Image 1 (cartoon, rainbow, N blue to C red):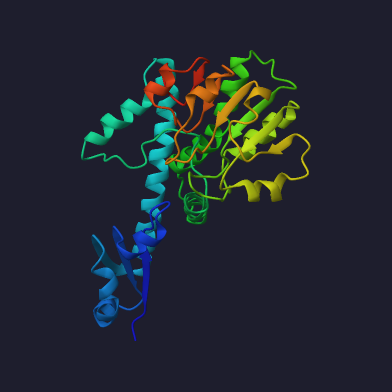
Image 2: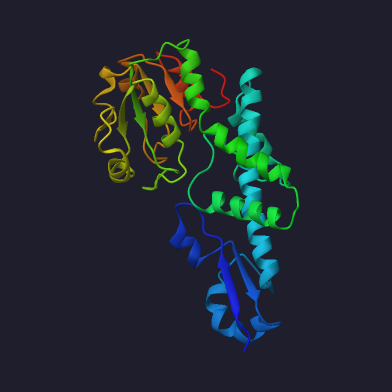
Length: 292
């Protein structure tokens, strides 16, 4: 009997809905023409997919891994371009929008930020890298994607250090968010971890509001004396000299009037603020590849 291996591309933050109506359904055949034997059983699911494709398992796995790595490459490319945008006083968000208008490019995974985390993309890159090493195939582009992503996680700290000309010891900062993506409670691979390590190395007090990731951060760093977790993002702003935005919920409005009460600089790794919000700020704004 032929055996099938199925793979559904789940969208971030919409796993349930994308399982019911996936954009792509891949079927890997252990035995040739297995999909024909079992297609009737899978039809209620595959017919909801925008696109489905079957091939041998090795091809499907290779294609799946290639797709995920391409998405990671787009993220690292945009993050690299954001650094060039900074030096040319160009807003990378406008550039991303224009790029997305070209149907050959599309609009997905073009947002600059602190990089990518979670389990899926990093795991795919690692597995491809190991496969290349085992096959003695050099993969410099893949290595660059990994290196850019890791370095990007420390970029906002360097911007913070430069803003204060290195005089950052013993400050107190507020951090909004900590998860690897907006709406998640997981922090695996998130830039919050290298950021906290760097801040604590300068004896900087960190006050964190992270609606979803609060529990996980408590488990990881609950005994750290330089960490305070809060339930209100605005309550302790009077005590801080800088605000970091790591993963603000996309469906939650930012209260600029509350931020303006302290006139402190904002270091926005998510590029969460709109142009109007940036213009209404009393304090300085530092984003990822954004002109102000």
